Image (cartoon, rainbow, N blue to C red; front, top):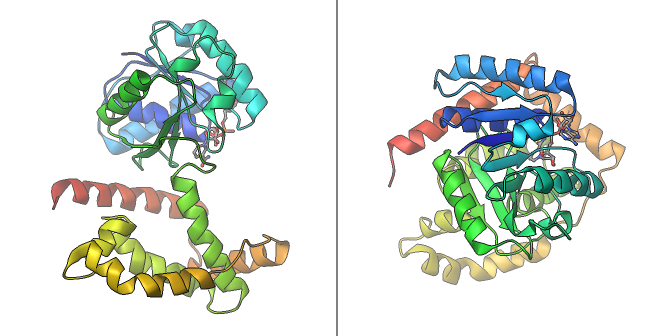
Length: 299
Ligand SMILES: NC(=O)c1ccc[n+]([C@@H]2O[C@H](COP(=O)([O-])OP(=O)(O)OC[C@H]3O[C@@H](n4cnc5c(N)ncnc54)[C@H](O)[C@@H]3O)[C@@H](O)[C@H]2O)c1
């Protein structure tokens, strides 16, 4: 298996580390040679820091060079439908017939990206959480033309490189991850806008409350452990309360300047004197430690 990483900005460079530490040969292409240079330098630092070894990625000066012999192509170019369609036409033309063409797209439908391509059957969305070398979940789905065998191979490959593919049976905007996130962010902003609590209290209820359990189990798994008789008893007993609450939830926020400023001021007050860079590094470090702990102690 050889991997081609096409587009190596924030997401592409992190994917490089996923594939190299799993032992795969990786070739990296970007329309900007400077982006390739920066991604390879970023990768060298990340590999030195995590100490997990792996292969050394190679830069490619043309797309054809990156695609030669590839069995997995991870596309992480710009997020517009015309850009993805143009890039996919090139990938389908240049990649070996057995290669799977996986897109990191956050929002787009593979049915549209791959429409009319001869190799539409081998195209999948593999949408990561940022940054994928730290957070393993990947939304995985095809378009209408994607072959089931390709999805099965993609699932196996993503597992083999240490990610957690979550398979969707069809396209919905936001896939699984951003849809669930949007449901929660909508309510967080609604509560802030309505003056019910300040930003720190709203974040704290996740960070020191729900989020602690959510690092281990999802909403159904948590519900299962919340009643002595398990999830059936829990939702039978509390279903009516949940429905009453769900009917009361806030609507879609406007994201106007005043709301964004209120969120900004709230976040500034949460982390006084800590740089944005340090905060991100701390987040990634802690997520890696939590992931290791989870692997060490399974139920
Ligand atoms: N940033 C995130 O949080 C996030 C999370 C998940 C998925 N994604 C998705 O990942 C993809 C990349 O996002 P990003 O944040 O890394 O963007 P980015 O702007 O950091 O990187 C995009 C890279 O693509 C390169 N590029 C442009 N046209 C190209 C072409 N024709 N061939 C090869 N390379 C080309 C650019 O030079 C740039 O280096 C998008 O589809 C985005 O929706 C982003």
